[in-house]
Length: 144
Image 1 (cartoon, one colour):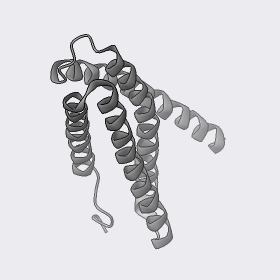
Image 2 (cartoon, one colour; image 1 turned 90 degrees about the vertical axis):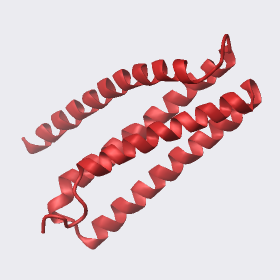
Image 3 (cartoon, helix red, strand yellow; image 1 turned 180 degrees about the vertical axis):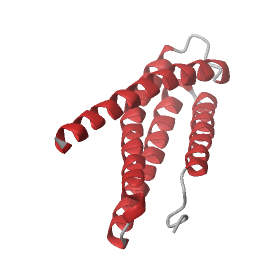
C-alpha cells in the first residue's frame, strides 16, 4: 500500500512540476519578449525554445532534489548530506553550462548584444529563483 501511495505522490508531484513549468515558462517568455531586443529574429526564438526544453529538464531535476531534501531533512546522515550536495552542485554546474552553451549559439545566430541580454536575463531570473528557494528552506540542522 505504501508503494502505491509513493507512486501516486510521485505522479502528483510530477504533474505539479509540469503545471508550474508551463505557467512559469509563459511568464518567462513574455518577460523575454520585453527585455530582449530582437525584432523579427526567428533564429533567436528557435534557439530560445530549444533552450527552454533543456532548461525544464534540469528544472525537474532541481525540484526532485528539493523534494529529496524535504523528505530526508529530519534524518540527514553525513553520507546522505554528501550525496545530496554532490547532486545539487552537479545540477547547478549543468545549468550554468547550458546557459553558456546557448549564449554561444545565440551569439552566432543573433549577435553579441542579444546573446548578452539572454545571458543577463537568464542569470537574473535564476538568481531570483535560487534566492527564493534558499529563503524558503531551512539550513541543514537548523531545527535540531
